[in-house]
Image (cartoon, rainbow, N blue to C red):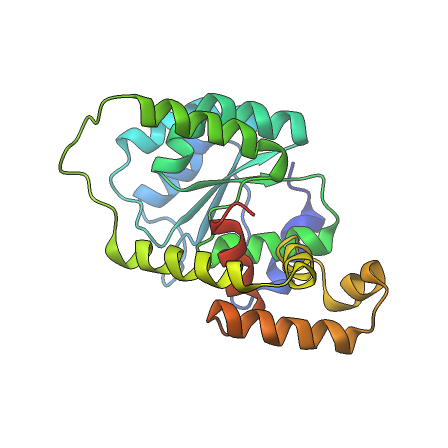
Length: 228
């Protein structure tokens, strides 16, 4: 699913990044485990084709050399594929923080989504949120396998701050934030809402102040964390 154009676009949009394509997960694992990649380069984001999702989940269960800094995603072709992946692997997507990356977006939105995932956001397409909610309900109904499992206090505090900030947003600010989180630039948002780009900038300034964030990427991460 990754053409040369897509690979070169990633390298253009991200500083000091090399985009590499491997024929399968095993080849990438061999390169990583044997330190074949150039010195000073580390895997920053691993995106796996949906056709290798089964092997990817098995790999994650036995992996011992991935660090928390490696972002993970499964690339899907369309909404139906996204929903299918979440229905089948929703629990593990949550456990291993694996995002679902749609490949049917326009290039601008796609690059913005890559930025979100690179910053640590756990992204799922809107079409698949119903499936994930069903997975969460099923997990909640199951007995706790590990009584010592604890939620990170820092993560819990961030999510609480996001929830409080989102609750303060006006309907128009929520609309703007939703479009920002979808990866659209200010000019496109302004055109869609029939306002000026300057007005969108003002909305963004107020949104970031209410959310307690410093840039649009952090605002988008906050938005997605609340499944808005």
